[in-house]
Amino acid sequence: QVQLMESGGGSVQAGGSLRLSCAVSPYTGTFRNYCMSWFRQVPGKERQGVAAIVREGGITYRDSVKGRFTISKDNAKNTLYLQMNSLKPEDTAMYYCAANTDTFCSGGFSSGYEIWGQGTQVTVSS
Image 1 (cartoon, rainbow, N blue to C red):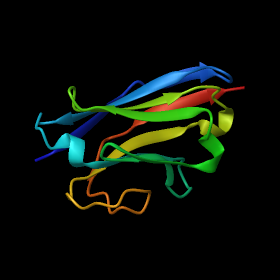
Image 2: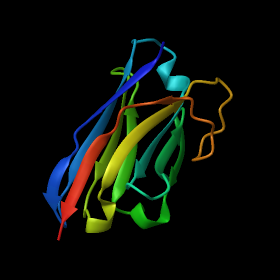
Image 3: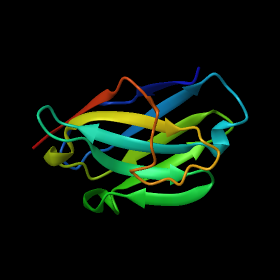
């Protein structure tokens, strides 16, 4: 049973940076084949795709985070990252990582992610 655990959230002032991590367990050699994504959600609003990565490439970003956020993965550590720079108050949300373990997953925000983490809160103050 694949499990995801996010960490790295916190409270920062506008313009600051945070790096989110998503540890995938158990450790297997198949992590490199997963489609992975970061989503965020504010209470009362729809969940938004933030960044997605397909296997060894194929990266997608939400327009509002392009140039500020970077998604990456370390296959040796079974970990997905989201580096967030130049944070804005509108980035405040609960951030979730998600995985699609289908070998033929197509990536993007509509990839059919079947495994989700518990989330980590990001709060950006002005």
